[in-house]
Length: 507
Image (tube, rainbow, N blue to C red; front, side, top):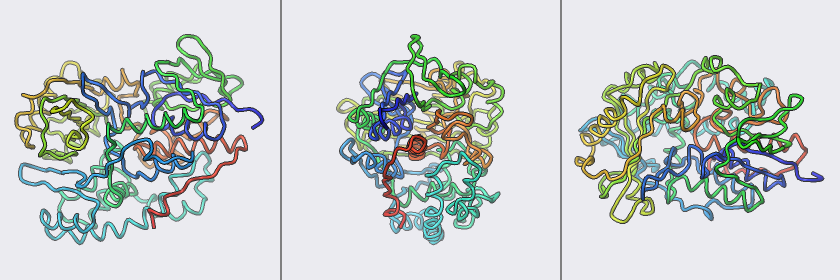
């Protein structure tokens, strides 16, 4: 480039920050506008008194994708954050009698299965062996854009047609490996990253559980919010400007292309390229300045579930409780059906609890701890009145935790608290329908049929985040930032070298 081209990125979430890192390093003049006072978006730090929480994601899987983003700018992610690989990974509990600890150690996991679900350990070994080539085939397809229908003719995609062109679900896949229905749930709950029912989630997404059991999961000391903070620091080191507490009003267009971004204060940030890291559906309805889509049209699409959140500061530490704990609903299938139906808030709910203070002393005062509690639930499509019911629902969630864990006196030790309901996600987070996992990942909303990384109809307006390809989940959101950045560079003839650490892990 004879002179640096200007790129304005809307939103300092992980997708926007991965783009900021890459493009600033490649010589573009990058400005990131973020309405919040801190970076991270749904991955930002949330403070409640003296306690620090992750707003959204609570562990990192497929760490090599994050490592690649840093490597592309000549950096090492370990220099910017402190990773802890967890073992055991998660405790899964079905009732007061049945629990299992999960681990990335294949033989240890097989032994755990043999103890709790005797006879299914060989099915686990077959699952792990079967999914290695499946991931090797699918992974390269998640690193390429699908803005042209001819993308389906790429040789690497042709190899995965058998995994995509099938009516089978994740549960159908697991039926071939495991006999016990409870154990199958240990390999299906990852579908929550996509906000989908495992009975409806396309079969190819069985690779999600495989990546966890193969490569493990990581905590970041201080919370996963430190990933966004580390990425922001790296981007700024290469000259990117990150404007916090800076709300944008709309994208400005001229002759069908994005000219820049107009801020709420009236200022125009001119740009040669604009990258949108806002919630996709919210942006299309509210931020497109005359080119917006009607809310009714956007609402006709399929969306993920939402989440009911509790962030609790405690005056004690539950040392004997696990870092991650999932309590399954008694009737998990009915719970999932309630969520998919988008009308019924289940009293028989599944609950995820993160007790990271046993690993991380930095997130609470000495002798204290914090709990992050997530309950998958309905989005706001049908207008459930969460303001009227949130306190009652909060008590039901806490009662379930007290009944199913060792935290029998939990409510006696709460000294700080914040609740986020699906309505809060919608109104405070600008998330369409409060659907925290964005558009559903159905076959008709994937690859070419998902919003394109370069927004259709525009030459210089790009999308990153869970609402575009490859989809929801922290690693895929990071990848979306890289895909869109590479497309932008290709359009300007800017050469680059791609960091590719995957072969080492996928071998």
